[in-house]
Length: 137
Image (cartoon, rainbow, N blue to C red; front, side):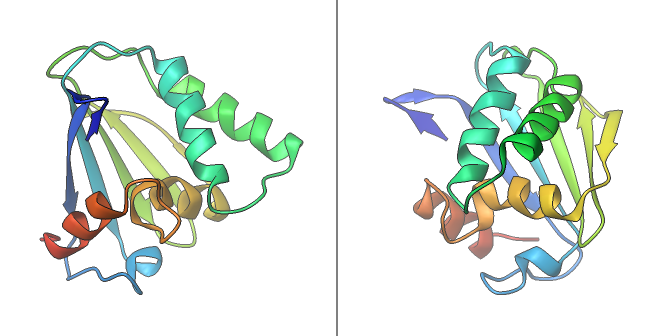
């Protein structure tokens, strides 16, 4: 993932079975982001919420709750750090920082919207989505 030519992170999709554009929301999968620069966890959370809103309206109360959860779970990162999200479809999202469990969000709507940042048709990075879905392993 690049922004204005600067590498922000590398991302990998892990899944026990092939994931397609039609099945990503029902598939257990993991997305691993390996960061290439320092970012504040709060900024990651805010940008994530902005990207989740691309998939449809989110009420103010839900947005506030989701932002609070992400702010709690997403630490500040530096080059080489890894954040991994594990999607349990229709159930929850679990998050890991450099392999250590950080916590979970037991909310199916949050889970779908969060992983939809990269995998939903409404993503802001359609070419990245295409690469992730083509390279699922």
